[in-house]
Image (cartoon, rainbow, N blue to C red; front, top):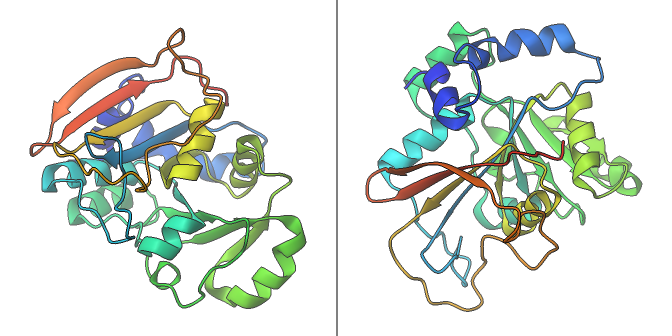
Length: 258
């Protein structure tokens, strides 16, 4: 799958050529106050809505086919965002790992890897986490009062950026100022709840594994919130795909609050 094809699958309303030009647009638009071109949420869950196991062990929800498709969506973006809880629990690599997708990024004039972004309130982050030692550019977003201490703690491992407040609009404004125009949000539950409640996304990629976890304390897709998309304001189902016995739903937000 090429970056162009991955972008087409992830964003059916966009022209096929957009993903291959996104790095050039970033270069030309640096410093201009423009909005996010694309924000995609991506999550995998069990049939009963769990995204991880209660004991913190990694829960395998994806298939090889689903994983490849998800990496294609990653490859079409400038940055991948997770919360600090996901970093502490999983220490994810957040990289594009398929050679053909890396080749397509290079051909498009993009860096080999998307930037990696972690959002933290407590700043309880391990500087030795693998997150900081592989992949591309690293960004850490934190409260302004903790900015100096976290910069000292992380050193040159990451760029530490202060947030004006904890709203999604502040998160996106900080990322825009860092040159990010296309964002892939992978969780965890608190981050997904925040973006879903704000309606601050263009599309949701929801992968559903065909099993029930049955653990009442296990993390779920989202927590309680005043969601923008309730029974009277639904997302639009663009497609349902079977990728290696995992159902992938592509859901469009027709009124993104960005």
